[in-house]
Length: 565
Figure (cartoon, rainbow, N blue to C red):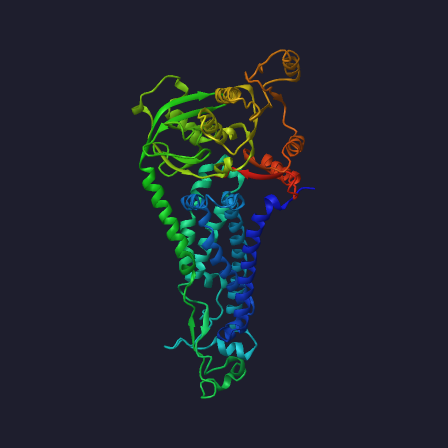
């Protein structure tokens, strides 16, 4: 039985603390409004709907404070750099920033639903108060508007429609607007929309600007009115003595609207996010010059660029923007160049409108060298840190890439190659298992030379066992072709497909067997598993890391790391 806590413990500890804070904030606010004398008369009109609305609003403020922080990429990169000496379990939580961002989004959706439903009941009760048979309700409802603000019911006319009353208030209009923004943001964030219609996701996600503006002005009208003179007019004693209101014993109750407080919650994260965007804007003004364009098989092309002052660690990623295509769209790509190289490179798969337009603008299909002035202007924002930065923190590393998901490991393997070329460099990393699931033989071509060089270098250093690479071809052959290759392959020193000493596999990996074998090979070792590829395979690998991790110090522990953009 695997040790679930190895991979899941730190994450769920953070999530647990966050949930406890939300529950505590909700319950505390609910009880506070339920027992407060200041809102006694308002509760008399609307019941516990007030408590539900205010409790959910408190949780909304808290989660709206947090949700911008995980997408402040410069902030996260700074924290990652400052925590270079921290334990890897703590650093790994930074790689889950988008996961936490989604969890916060789910909580905001839940609290928004509670808040909206509660206020719907509020307005129904406020309008219905004019027809109530309770004389105390009638008395509090018909309090006149005076210079002292001695009224509690914001609905001032009997017989009105609750929907019309909603749209008469700033809170109602802004509430509808921010709810619609939230619906559009959430529905466009699904995997289907992001993969097939990235532009839709990109533009609708920026509705968060309107969402935050609406959130801040939502309470400026102060329609939630609390009593201000409870020391003179005790509502618990005076509400049944409405016929004596205005006397010395029970002076007329006075009310005022609650001041807006959301801005206090969201001011700091909004300022941080604005600073983040300013940094990214000025950094992107330094354009990158495209020095080389290489067309690869499987609809992949490579861009090599030069940018003054640019430096990156292996496996980091950047955002690219092409002004001739769109002034607003930025797309993330993993760097495939090593820090030891004097250029930065990315490998881009042509899928979707933006990548096709970029390929056309870079003259990918023309097959001839183009002068720099003919190339489009590219803005590069980054680099930003990923889980792969912790690659050298493990004695044993397992790299798993699927298709174009191999790109972050290109930079990692290049960096390893350069370190091997430097005989004076010592690494704590002792073993690398590299797995690549390729769609066809052509997909391998652009990566082949790198693996050959690294393989040769390890042989020359007398450490041929350092790198174990396993390439799986899933298409481009049939069973007869694979059988013939395997029959005639026994006498060949090199693989006939890749030209490497380690043989190519045909079909998909049996991951359960792979992890079982790794667990047996590396007893008592912490193994870093790094993956980039589709979500379905990520889920499978994550479960296997949990399954084969041992809580015993003499057993193997697999730490799962996934690339997130």
